[in-house]
Length: 206
Image (cartoon, rainbow, N blue to C red; front, side, top):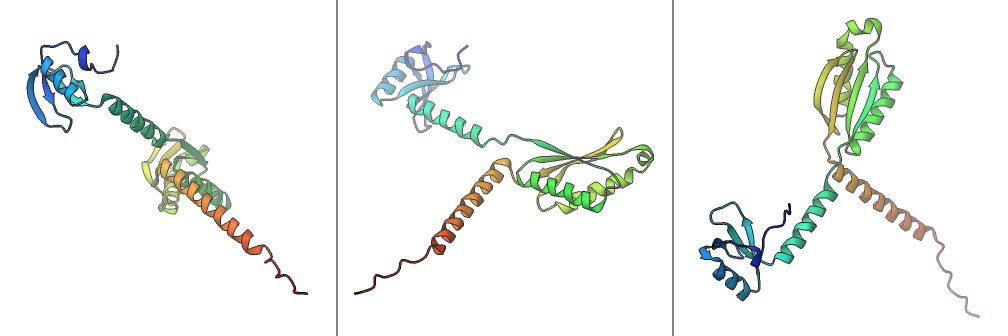
């Protein structure tokens, strides 16, 4: 079935509730009068509420309306953030160097606008000490609090404990900032190159 609204001569009802081009209520008029008003205004008669009794129709430039709607939908799709969840796995007794490395990954993911699923893996007797994993997750959340927030609190899942950290910045914002930073670096490099070029020596008079 077509999702296109009926317009002009395709509207086959005896009368309609007519709305003007600026949203003003004209009232219930015969379909003939509505089509005549549309023709005089050089506009289309568009059925906007087919199930109403009588159907509601509006005077508008349908071609322009379709174009603007398509552009808005295209812009919305372009700006839509495709949520990506990255995963980092830690051990309850992780050494400081490994912790800093893993934290660096989390920071990078959050800066890029991605969510991070942090998994603590318990082995053997570690399973009887869930508080170790909980404290580690709390520490990580506090270390990256400027970039992200705890979206899903730590919870036990079999031998693992899982927490999800969401970014403060949306994916689209992170991309825009990255592009701006890249452009700025390019401008600085060009400026440095122009400064480093030797100045032209004035010609010596003979």
